[in-house]
Length: 154
Image 1 (cartoon, helix red, strand yellow):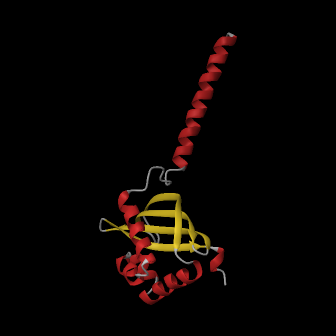
Image 2: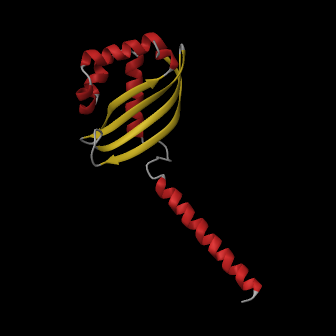
Image 3: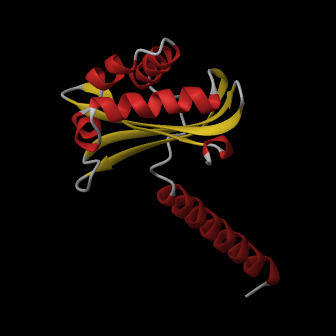
């Protein structure tokens, strides 16, 4: 074989390997939602955020998913939100850090799920907020809400 033919074969092989690598990386990352967050999902986060700001914790519980209601009582849910407000203060700004869409066939969060992670600045400091939404009867509902901040340490 000529040197130019071997060079052409090597280039083709490199392109094939690069293509396979890209396909492999894309397959490994299929749960990460790269587009914008669907409007219906964002609407739930916006609504929950407004209810927290208005301290309407009962309504958050009433509008939440069955999963939320299985995990906590109305009283404990309200107490958690009051504690967050006392220690962190109001949300001043929030930036989407990540969004993951999942279709779970089993486990605690069975079904269509969106997990949104935000870098959040509160009145008294910074933290990470995580909203987990689950689709129930064609409606997105809050399944979990978690805040991680050094200000929550006792």
